[in-house]
Image 1 (cartoon, one colour):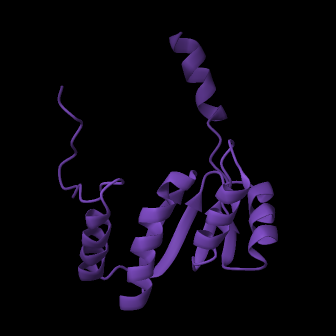
Image 2 (image 1 turned 180 degrees about the horizontal axis):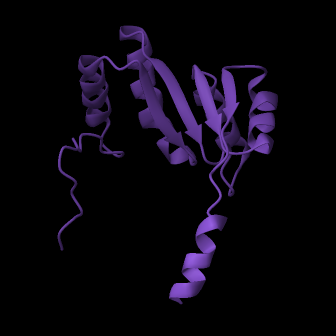
Length: 134
């Protein structure tokens, strides 16, 4: 079975191999981005993202931005909330997709980083096309 591979993408991060976390941070440092944008929706990403952003913040001026699809995952527990608080409090900015998520993050992060609400677009204008096709 062939894995989907996209040209010009460097597949350097292996979520279960800590060596790649440091190597990925090194590649980011060499690139010198103005912003490091990371998605957040499950605590599974905590160890690798914490490692990467810790290295990035020590060695660059890059701003760390998290896009939070769900600030706290649906199958949550106290330790997942604490891990999320710990990681997201290190962000320079957080982008959410609802006021409810933004308000929740402001509450659990005690002001913390700048939180921005940017709603998902509505696909309602496309619904007439779907009904004509089906």
